[in-house]
Image (tube, rainbow, N blue to C red; front, side, top):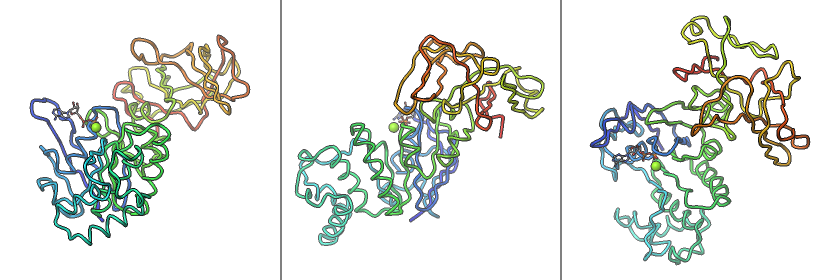
Length: 366
Ligand SMILES: Nc1ncnc2c1ncn2[C@@H]1O[C@H](COP(=O)(O)OP(=O)(O)O)[C@@H](O)[C@H]1O
Ligand SMILES: [Mg+2]
């Protein structure tokens, strides 16, 4: 087993002027399950491929345990990668697919057989060992791909969107299986996904990337309760956090309900008279007319236990998305949702208000 450390690791693809991964600093503990998440094109696969040795590192270093692997060939790094499109060999049986890397490495036949049998048992694939991939379901193929990594008993597992070819229901089942399998095996794992729900449910810690730059690394709980900047605030959580531009007064932000969020004098002085206030849909509560933010209800999404109200706030300003203001979203009781077209009033719960600098995106409150 081993730790993994990215030390200002940078990748600039030939012909590009900007790095696709820019000075990535990230330490992953021994046996930890770390999820790297972010929108498409943010540099997740590039980061993983640098760790695997499949992509050159232009600046900085990468360590596995106490070995500097920055310029080591992939086969010497003792990592096993599971790709998005499994890449199973169609002409080989499940057993042959799982044992192939060992065969190439010159491991003897009986040893291969034992390791494949062990992995098959863990993955519930024993009865399929003699089948070809085309005679398997999507979920079984995915497990074969996992099996290929497991038989190598590497120091580190690398997984690049390994669930993206499965349908929604299977994806949910499989993510639980992978997370519990990883905990059982205790192998340090770096898992890449663009899906923040996957990241939050699977990872011991989550690292959020945007445009090649690491934004925050934290436990799912801390990431959700304490986003470090506007990007993370908007990216983590579904439906998304409400982010509204509001004016500041001399001490901070004051809400109609009387709630006052102080901002340090020094930080306040640097602002242009405005902050972005973030409140999650579940952190809003109904308020009386004189103490709440008035919202015109446009859509009510009834989910049974809860309802989500989508509307337009009559004060403050939400950012635009494709030219139209983002809706304001509030979770309300499912049995008594407000009517479409009505005006309702909301106030934030005191301990769940986030405040950001609109210019830098940085969090302003502790
Ligand atoms: N071989 C390549 N040559 C040039 N640019 C690349 C190459 N591979 C990826 N990129 C660019 O690097 C950025 C990050 O890509 P990638 O790591 O694949 O993102 P992700 O996996 O997060 O979707 C993107 O802007 C992408 O266009
Ligand atoms: Mg990718």
